[in-house]
Length: 112
Image (cartoon, rainbow, N blue to C red; front, side, top):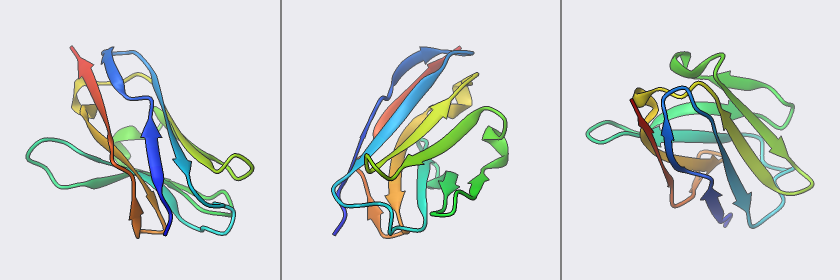
């Protein structure tokens, strides 16, 4: 079982940036799909970005051009660089591995 621990959340003003990191307990080189999801109050958890072992990426339309997902197989980490943050980006952000394993989540709050 893969354990995932997120970090890097916090409070930021609109237009600011944050970088989320997710540390995995096992080698991620053999895990194809790694992703970041988010859940805002009263809403369902939704995909933000995903990266495959081949480097292919998928982004939610709402974050395209502002967020960048990356993976470091040597360090077993997955990162999400978030720029030009908006109040609607406020949510708990979760790291996910292969659609099975979840981290505990990290809160991101963007003030207007």
